[in-house]
Length: 328
Ligand code: CP
Image (cartoon, rainbow, N blue to C red):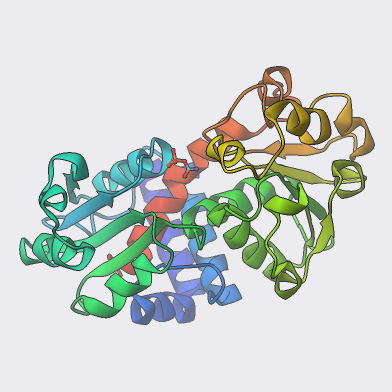
């Protein structure tokens, strides 16, 4: 009965979003949230919602006999694992290239590495790289039959993280238009912050950022958000707070005087959130430095924190992303 319900709902969902499905088919890649149309976002989130509601009744195996390759030039727990689960859910074989033991150590370029994997038949490449623009570079270079999904490029973008954040926010609070969200911490080095800002603004949210001035981008005016160099005005009456990881190497670069000072001024704790809405939702893309950007007690407090739910939702959102790009 459930199986029938799930497939009927899938057909209805695809039919309802037919125009957006065609746009995804044409797009083929997922590189950023900035250029996504609202109907493409709705379509992806509707599909993710079905995946989450019917976990035992997965989508059709649209990637059966296909290879999905994960090329992670930077470490990952959540993104890589959830993409691999998503690819398996759609019937694909997962090819994970262990970059450390690959020919990259002999000087092989990103382009050649990707070309080599595609020559083995990869239908989709999920790429994370320290260089901003690397996913765009691959999308332009590769044959049109390969989809490229950006799993994080430098400071630039992490689109599936932003989409799972949006999915989790809607799940927690329903309609988001006009709701206030504060993104707190190291904004300048955060691809999550950039992708979130573009996406949450499309949703009509009131977006604020807060961090030490050295950790806020110089071109922040281009993002059209409210900027704060103190945490309290940013989180006042907030519906959502997205806490970013304090990248510890920033202290070595002299961008913050000391972690102690950062914690004193910006660490989120139960006391600080008293100024936010009573039912404020606390989010973090992970990995969390417990005790640095957020207290352990608050990160673990399920009255506020949806950090684990973000991870759970990541699988459904990535199934939908792969379905619409590579599987359409
Ligand atoms: N949020 C995120 O990208 O986590 P990982 O680095 O573990 O993939």
